[in-house]
Amino acid sequence: MGPDPGPAQESGIEPSASSGAWSAGPDYRPSVVPHDRLAGCAAAHRRLLDLVERVDDEVLRRPSGLPGWTVAHLLTHLARNAEGHSGMVEAAAGGDVRDQYPGGQEQRDGDIAAGRDLPATTVRAEVAAAVARLERAWDAVHVDVWRTGFGRVSTYGVTTLADLVFLRWRETEIHLVDLALTDLGGPSWADLSPAYVEVEWAWAVRGLPARLPPEVTVLLAPGDRPSTAVGRGDTLVVVDAPTTAALAWLTGREPGRPEWPALGPWW
Image (cartoon, rainbow, N blue to C red; front, side, top):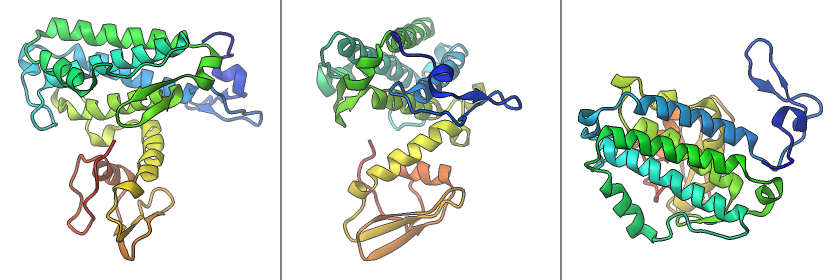
């Protein structure tokens, strides 16, 4: 990533002897390079690649956890999504701006449909190649490009490179669960990375006001973190559920309890 120092040297972070995790020391300084998001997404990519190695042709034809999508559809989407991110990062590094899917929704949908009948050997190779290309693109980004570079995502519009890293991390974490391959060692909703859950909670809460009916205020009371009130309506609804259960509702993976309000689309 150009001359930008690594996370330990740059931020004064020191490893914990007991856990091997990084903890902020007294000289901690935030970085323009999203080291935590890059590390989180890289870990999710490793889990994805490990799981894909156990997928054969029969497994590819299974329905996934997303209505109307097979495992093949979803893995093809993860490969094409990574390629779209690579294109945005590579364009930003060259001083240009690129849409995630230059052909728009039609390109995205067509690319996913094209993966329906691919053999497992091809799917494995495409996912691995797409992940490798994206991680190489991130590694090559100069610190100045991290500061001011951006891409365009249909759901968000202009999006910084740091936020693009999170969106790819989200895509990988959530769709690993959506694959519904727990019998092959794949994750369930409860297995979401704690680091990802921390960032996703902040994103989901920030985007919730636009998704709520105008007459509703929601009090998120997970119990494992501070409670948060969202909305300006006179009708108060308490969402008394742990963070991961609340996120399953906020991300549209679970309908939630009958008394919880209907939400607008999640992006």
